[in-house]
Structure formats: C-alpha cells, structure tokens
Image 1 (cartoon, rainbow, N blue to C red):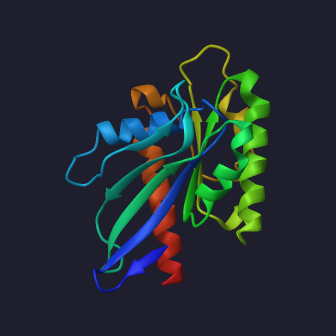
Image 2: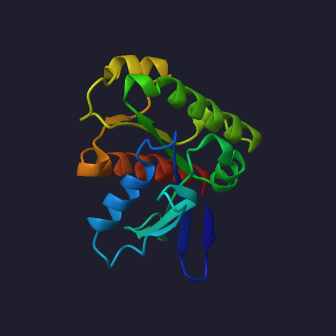
Length: 194
C-alpha cells in the first residue's frame, strides 16, 4: 500500500499467483476487455515468443473511494514456470492481496500444491502470515474434462474458509466474482491499518 496524500490516492497491489498455464493472464485479459476504459489502464504484458508470461502482466483499475482516498488497484500476474522463481518473488513484493489461480484438472494437482507452497514461503519471508493475508482462491478451467471436485480442491489447497470461486476465465465465468472478493478483502485490511 502506498498513499499519496497530496493527490488523495491509495495504490494497492493485487497479484494473481498460480502454476504455469492456470489462467492468470486470461483473468487479466478478460477484466481488461470487459471493463470501462475510463476506469482502467492498458494491459501490459511481457511475453516470450511462445506467448507465455515472461516477467508479469499488469493492469490498473481505478474504482470508488476508500476512506476519502481514490484507490488505484494494480493487478499483476506472476510467471508460473518453475524456473522463474526469482521473478515471482519480485512481483509478489509489496502485494496487498493475492488471487491464487488453481488449475482444476486432476493432473495439475501437484503443480497447484507446489505453487501454493512457493507463494506461502515468499509471503513468510516478506513478513506475512498466509492465514492473515488477503487471499482468494480461484478454481479455474472448470469447463475441461477430468477436473477435481471442488470440495477436494478446497481440502487439498487448504482453503480454510477463504473465499473460493469456480471459474472458466476464458469465458469470464467467475472472473469478476474473484476480483470483487479480493478487492473487498484488501480494502477491509487497509481500513484496519489506516
């Protein structure tokens, strides 16, 4: 969180985290395509030749008011590929909230668990306890065959009462529900701290 008192702005960072190809970028692309251009910036992506996220994707939204301040939500994705661990840690630095995007397919369960543990480890090194940190979980790709049941995913990914949303990000299903939930959790945390 960064507050510019002169401009009466509060900058809040939300990071979409998860394994490679889970749909993090797809979430931001859908939000960008279906949000009024007056309240959003351009979608910035740094990709490889194979169209995979290399460093991060970034989108800014300006929504409402928080305690007399104009909030600017900076949405980032992290690269999911295992060898980009340093990039993920760097992008996560300074986050006010996280959306963990899990791939619902049964054969991606180990990737989800590894990515979630990676995220929790990075948050701990930054002084955050994952249980107290604003976190929302999205079970993406629910339209594909061979998806794990939602109760199993909740249990396996230790959702512990956190908001969880089923999604088909490519169609927009669950995308804005997830975004609203993480914004609410981040704003609630900010209101406690200010």
